[in-house]
Image 1 (tube, rainbow, N blue to C red):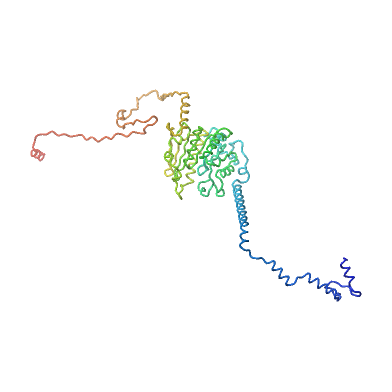
Image 2 (image 1 turned 60 degrees about the vertical axis):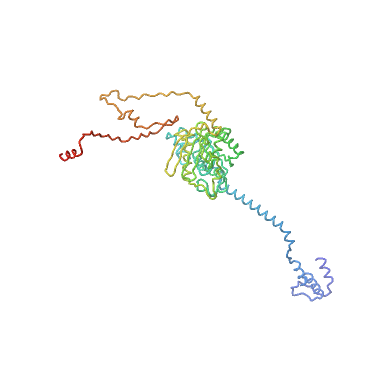
Length: 478
């Protein structure tokens, strides 16, 4: 019992009954208790006036212009926080896209790296069909392909397919150069996929190619090689980015779509003496070509430049708003195919390597030719390479050409049979046209025979001296 309870019990008059809780049945009627209970109720429950005042105090007042002006900085801060959040979400989205493009792990489709190519014909061997080329006598040592490094400049319609083919062939190392990003407009040119939109082309290509063949080493460079600062970086990588660091690459492939980049590659390769192959597709997408360029030995890109390059025309001025070049995956695939075929023949030393091979889809025409370097080429490094090549050829030992005599199959000629031409040499010379004076190395395929007018023998009749009447009389008597 507390002190308060003891005090209340002492103040209770004698004879008053004990009280129970207010709800109890045995509560005694006491004036003192009633007064105290009423006082407690007044202290506990406020009056109506007090309630009205309390509600009025809690009621909000409408803000004025001053309050609104004071809230503007807070709103600006809130907008800035929202913008930062949007940027964070965009970065997370880009990372998620990159993760999806990369795939699960670096295992390249789940298989481990293969240290040595095997000719074993089993379903689990990805190189069995390639090694069959050696068994069939096409290539002497196909596994040698793993010792080569190839640089591909331009990972677009032709370049991406070229990189894919070389990856499937098991090339040792690929260096990819491009500064563009994957767009949905690229989907008609094979290789790239819609979920890779927004990624750089070299990054998207590396992710896909690594999953195709994890045995290939990849090195990607996302910059424009035509700028002054990046040109030095480009030259450094093709001269030191071989399979062994510090050694040059074995081949450079140009798969770009503009003449400025082609001339940049040509300048770098002429300066370094680097062999490279150039490729291209026409703007109407129905023709293309490839070209092997060995500095000093064959014509470089500046030896016989296109009109746009020779006239020093800015390519950007030729483009019109809303007009783009046509593009067919079929033409891109054909050009990439003949380019990689030429690369394999050049690296593995089989077949005939084409110095120039064209493709006309309208007529299914594949012209080939080779061009000698231009002694008056505008590129001084090209002229320098030509002089070095001439010295190299002059230093080679001369080989005497020995004409082998035809073996006589039959020693005896019992019947005296001889082969005699139906036309004599003099008649053949007279029937042929004149042979023009041509430079060394150029011959005519045929000569146009001279036109001969049909000669009609002239018939002469001697004069008999008879008159016309006498002649008519003779004719009547006949």
